[in-house]
Length: 345
Image (tube, rainbow, N blue to C red):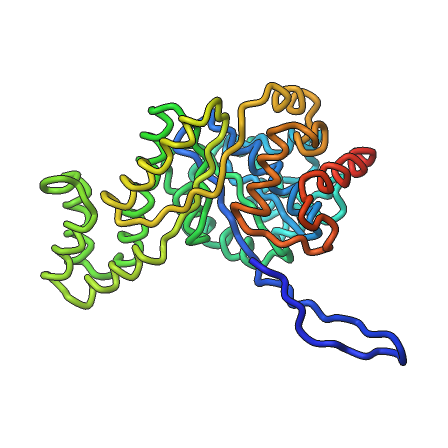
């Protein structure tokens, strides 16, 4: 994702101002198949990293009923949260936005007070999605809850390139696969909600887990025979879904090497192209930073895990340095900028 120089604009004799083309807003829902993968930690630190690169960022805590993203920003009892928006106390999502010590990083806290928040009505959820899309930001990162509730799946569908955070343990990969499988079925079911015969075929296939192997292409073959146009729509829908994978809490190289097999399984069984964008090593200083209610990139910017986060942004996710401060030695420069920013926290 590049910020490209476009035209030269002369505003005064001898002074040339370069207009930059700001990229369209990027929305990244961040999910994990299970709890404990560190997705909130990743979301908070990616948000800080993007702000250090010069982008306008909004972090949204979409873990409805189990919100904790605010704790990374020393907000023990946030004065405003999604509760106020979903209960219609305020009209716009921007009205519950909080500032952070990073000037260009804003926070929308989740809510834990409303008992029914974890199961919000469909129309309310659609309103929340519309308002997220309208947020004034270069990047919107949404920290989602664990599991496969409709709330989580539908908020993840805000982007075709959402991020899955997974740890190396086998059960974490199983849960991540389960999340992706539910996501694929949810996308198909929502897309064909008004095509009753096709939706019935999808539902029946989902209940059976696939007639023979559970491979998604078998379902597509059934749809193509039943309704060629609908079958082609399903093919296109699956082709546009390209989630990203971050491996967290890595202890050795072997665990990274195993990722490719997982990606191949996702492609083979779910007909989904998944991109591995990088990993973050296990580091006890994550816990130390959490205990101080601050992101690792601010508290320990020179650690190996901080380097991994930097590589995630500038290599894996291919984010350009909008302020042109870091050049090739991006990690060292980013660590210096993060250290300078720490005095405001």
